Length: 362
Image (cartoon, rainbow, N blue to C red; front, side, top):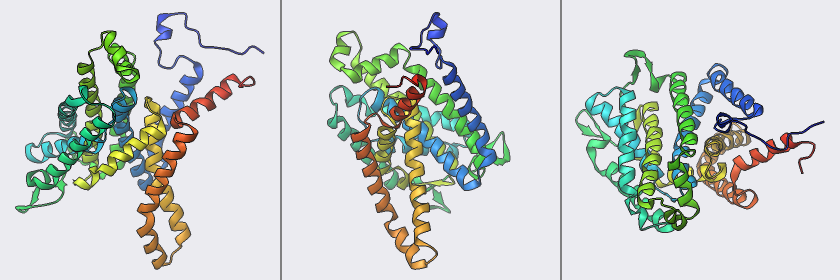
């Protein structure tokens, strides 16, 4: 029996294909079919969980562009999400901007501010750059908490949350994104597909290769002619643009947003997503986002099953659940770094290689 020992390309078009093999195209078709089928087979609570995974996947891809592909550590993911969410919400509240335009404008605003935050990246790197982005996180949190016009007002009184108006699609009040989970899923999933394809293709261009060269060895990249300052700031802007879209979707999904959804713990969660999923890969971002979003729900379901129906046990369970979640997150990250530093994406690749090379997969 003949077994293919490699993937050979005989034409330029074949070499440029994102999915050159038959099995890759079959898996892609299955994923596309799954995305179409999901709204028809899940209940409303599961649909909302899926929507959260989709938003987190977009945000994780954005962070991976900066951290995984370019090697610029950031602890300001919560700040970039907040900029996108509040920009999208404020444009609708104060200027009645239609939500598609508000979402796109929020992404550009987030990219602009991301570029400003990335300005110190030429002089700072590693932990020093992480501290600089942490400062941005704290500044954005402070502004949101202390500047009343951002939080909005009800009956002339300032509130702690920005109320998001109904986001009717095509002017139809029955097609509002924040009260129709299925409709929101269609919009968010379409955006995820576009972001995933655009990011994958970005790293097949000279811009993406410059990002990777900076990550691998910035001095060597500069010697080869890569403008470090320009491409580092550009990496911040591209990352912030994608994260701003995720933030805008968070606003469109909700009836109100507040600073509690964009704290430092959110930034750490997103770092955990790309570490567990796989640094420097688009698919790893999606795997990691799904893992981090679904894991708390699994823990909550297991805990409720163990606590039973006793009110005292349920109350105690709800009290310790956040601590259990944080402990499990920490253990999972440590175990991942020890067993498979390249994350879930590497484990999945190993499984695929095993079956592709079987019976000579040794």
